[in-house]
Image (tube, rainbow, N blue to C red):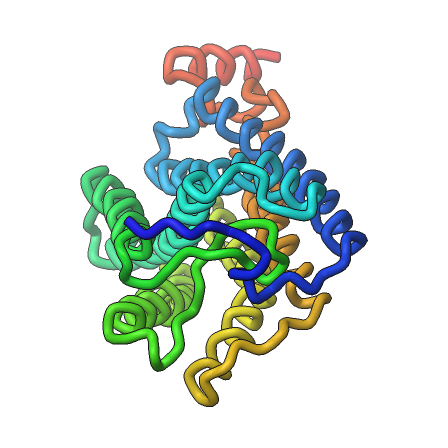
Length: 327
């Protein structure tokens, strides 16, 4: 495992003044605390209510786990280091931080794709009068974990490298140059294709397919509720991807000059600051979208489960339904 000693002479990014790093740290802490509270709220709601009984909500909880993990990394470590103007926790912890940050980032992308794919499969199987069983959901969750581990581990062993980011305060994946050899490029190119290009193309492709099939075949009230959940998931995907655009631009800004000209350019301060802040803010998007668009999850989050029979155990749902009609 390759460990980097993060001295100023070894880091090419130490040109940000302290005011920018203070702003970065403050924003990371604010969005991080907000994200932890929102995702923990959703997590506790899933445990307290019967949302997990609905198979689609298992994938919602899967994305919530990735977002919560990203939050717990962001503000205690990245935020405090930015306020201190340097990484505070040593080279070994920096490698661990970069690994976990990479892991949860890939996990979030694959989890978004899994949610959209599930919406498409439900509509397709409804057309064919078939059922999507729980084993498909556990398979999708297993794929999320597997892909995240596969594409977060290699830089720890020399296939690519984790080093300081553009602000010099945290550790992240360092994009390789043409002179980095086959080990660096052999990891980076599949990483971009499998964890970036393919999920994004798949999200929008299956999103369109799911909308078209649901428009044709979903008619009754239960199916209309499924359509509302589909719209909510699509809103989550589009908003999250939009907030990840600065991070993608930052990666391209760093990598393309390395590949084309062999030098590492200075990154604009606004881009270097806005990219991690937007990525941290993206972890709050799922809960906000569910709260505004999904009636079932909103009822559970706001503690109004008695007003939504689907959230109650079957025997209690019958009791409350009967009392409601008697009144």
